Image (cartoon, rainbow over all chains, first blue to last red; front, side, top):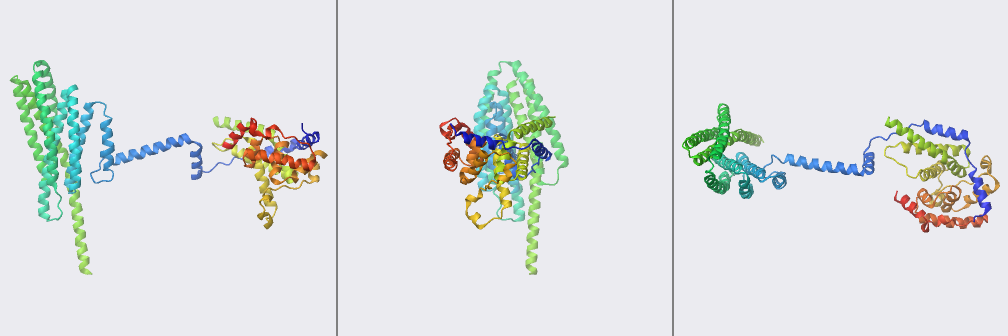
Length: 363
Length: 201
């Protein structure tokens, strides 16, 4: 128990208080002051982040995702040798393939990837930047992707043989078309190099060879797929009505494809300039289109003769030739730009050299 | 509408706290500055700062009492710094950084302070600076050791030690037979939870 005097002393001290008038006055003075609003500063933002941990974590995640997304978008049109190219080939594309829901979609994506590699080779060749290192890395990637695709096409065949045919023809057409384009570029660049007598000419032939190697391996795979397709067709030939239905459906799609590609070729022909590269490629497209129409006619003849499996095979050939022609037309505008850009760069480089030489003389 | 409701809620909370704590803070300031008008100014300053902090977005004051006494202590120190010119002696001695004005009877007479109370205040003012506030806040204002620890900016254990030693010192000065409250040895009592909560803040 505490001392009573101590308790009394405490009680006395507690009696010290403000009068009610003083209390009211102080209260009113305090309430009259308007709260100071903090100005927005880096410090206050830092404080806000400290107090709203969960929101700031969310903001951080959003920043990371958007930064990653920007890198992914930026890497879309990169070429071998670019800083962001490894992001495209080592991250974005494998993720796309891995997240494909069905083998069919996976095969379609893989076909796109092989086409991308071949287009990259073309662009580099057109720019004259295809050196040994880039060529080798593209070769390896094409080989890898073609082998992955071959394995996957066998999976697709089990579920949807028609779609497997479609993918096979697209791939075969793209490999043929891109190989031919690379060949044309090689010839074109060879001439320009001999004309300009430039040193350090890029080994475009090497790229063609590498693409050819890839295409030959792919052709083998597509050939085997076509052989098995024929075998399948033989077994299926018992069901004639089903075969006819399949044929007529495919014929319709091939006809519409030929029609649209013919229009594209006509458009490219009318806008064609005097560029040798463009002329050669458009000419190739025209030849392919003629071949496609011949094959279509052949297919119709076979079909009218009741030879449905041969008709289907000719139809597939026609489809492949049309797709090749379409790819040629697509490539013309893209490559023309590249060649023009290279010419502009070369001329500006030449001018600089001339100016440099003149200034040297003055000095 | 939400903003109005929020302001009304804040105002009501502030009014409640003001009515409960205004006298305690006034006492705390008055016995330190020995000037009624000055003490009223300090109380106004303390509550203004409290009101403004309450209105800051994202700010929530968990322990208003501890907050108010911390502000009061700082305001009194500021007031002393402004009032007294800094001497080389005071700069050399960190103890003088905790000011305590000698209680003047003339100022406290207005506050109806009886003989025993005046005697105790006078004794508290003579305590060593480390024990003075701990003893005052513990016995006059009835604050718990964790709350005092928060105000003084030290650990609850250190506060308990200061209170115990302060009591010893006060016994010698006054001759009062003051018993050590169980709550002061908080580490054995329930005060430990509050201490943890306050220290984590």
